[in-house]
Picture 1 (cartoon, rainbow, N blue to C red):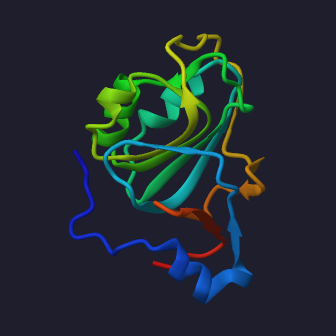
Picture 2 (cartoon, rainbow, N blue to C red):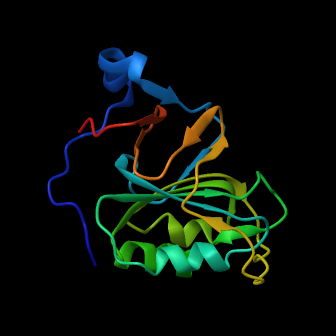
Length: 166
C-alpha cells in the first residue's frame, strides 16, 4: 500500500487566498467519503455513464500523487465505485477519487485511507459494458478537470490548478 508520509496540510482557503486568479473552484455539490479529508495530486480522468469498467482499468494502475476524476454524467441511478474498487485504489497509490456520480459501501469506504468526493450513495452496482473515454478533459461542478493538472481538496472544497501548488 502506498501512502503519503507526513503530507503537507492542504488548506483550500489558503490556496484561494494566495492563488485565486489561477484556480478553478468547484461548486460545493459533493459529499465527503473516505477517511482522508485532505488530499491532492495530479489529475487523471475517465468519462463513463452507469458503467465502471474504465474506472476499474484506471484504478488498477499503480500511481503516486494521483487523483482519479470520474465524470459519471451526474447519474444517481447506480454506484460507480464500491469498497472493493476503493480498496484497490488505496493499494495502488491513488490519493483520491472525485466522482460525478455515486458510490456504494459508504461505511466500509469511510474506514479507508483515501479521499473520496461523490454526489451521493446508491446500493446498485453499475453496468459492465466498457463504454466511455479515458484521459480527456471533463467538465462538471463549474470546473474543467484536465489530465496532468492538479486537484486539491479539504473540508472546505476542491480547487484545480494548472500547476503544482503544494
